[in-house]
Amino acid sequence: MAGSIVMTHGDCDGIISAYLYIKHFMKDMWPSNISVIFTQPWRANLDFVREYREGIDEIVLLDLALSSELVKEIIRVGSNLRKVTIVDHHISSLEFINQITSNLLKNSKVVCEKAQSCPRLMITSLKISPNPYEKLLVDVADVCEGGEASSTEVTKLADIIKLSIARDPGDYDFMNYLLTLLMRNRDIESDTIVSKRYKTAKFILSRLLKIMSENAISYRNVVKISTLSLPESRIFAGLLGVGTTELARMYKSDIILVRSEENKVVVTVRTLDDKALKLCRDIAKLGKGRFGGHAEAASATLPELSLQEVTDLIVGVVSGREDILQGKRKA
Ligand SMILES: [Mn+2]
Image (cartoon, rainbow, N blue to C red; front, side, top):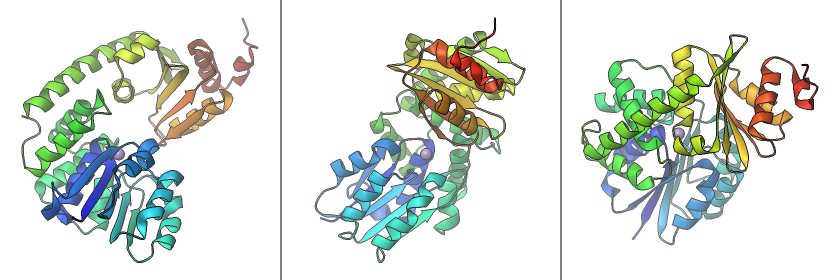
């Protein structure tokens, strides 16, 4: 029996992308002849290899920032397939387009363009005419990806989906559950399983915001730096990115969260303009770490420094005093 793989990002706009694609292009095949795989960009190649099997004749990749490892796997099996479809809105994927289309000429469709969310790109480039509910979901996907909400209905639904999955970003059964609710036209907001998760996450988020506000220190009135210990990072796992975004909105200020994780320090930056990625690049460069993300929402990981050292380094970067890192701090 021929089957298809739909592999999508395990987040709010990834779930909505899978829903739109399956509903519009693969409706007769769902659920029995489609393996829906939720994944993260850094492990997508591993999940793909694990799920791919003899008899699969179509693969669809949605909302996944491509990596050379993933592209290699797609090309390896691609020529045996009837169809390969890739839709993604991350700019980092652009560099792989030529490699894929030149290797899989006849049977591939690759749509990679910068867009607020993957569903937004899908309706503009796959000729989907969305009904009112689908339009709402595309707006929700935009908000989940940092866009401005057009109505309170959009804000609420985006909040529910984002927070209900945030606490356990690896719970792909729950993402499948959300997809099934959408496919069966069930109301997400009134679903008991979803609202239980949402309420728990909302409560924990409010505690996180309180702690982050209390220990935030302002620098030059333009940026607030907040720190979390390792136990605190664990308690609030899954909500740290959402919390930092929320705090930036509350205070209308740039926010830098510095927290301890197992064997590393993670820096999460949200800025009102487009300087988060640049800040993370500077921090990563000075601290010999890695960085990534979007212009206004980015992060850096520093494996070799302590929480205090990273905080000092950041103070140096935001105040233009990088000498602090070298220990030449004035009394
Ligand atoms: Mn996504």
